[in-house]
Image (cartoon, rainbow, N blue to C red):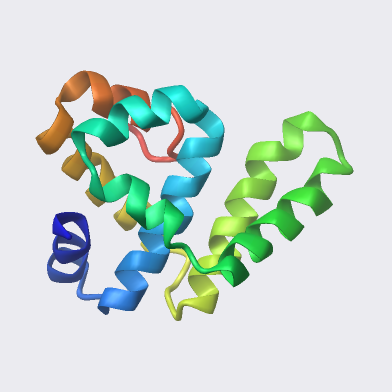
Length: 131
């Protein structure tokens, strides 16, 4: 997978960390953008769909539980809950929270290279990095 190779080479992470971290971030993006918009982006950068699909169930559970906890405080806390879920997932993968932004920037670069700026802008709406 090109994206996994890019993450391992550029960020110096293991293949498992690259797959898990990208899957966590892309799941959040898919949830934020909606199925249709994410599918449009993924059709031009096929690695994205498989990384979300192959995300271990335990990582999905971590995100879901943290998001559920934050939903008690209202809808505005949803993005904060999602960010906390991503952070928890990264820590579980042995990655620091500082790596989240590096992963997001690399994923955004990958999507722009594969699918162009419009897809990159669309994906960027769901990420926490400045475009």
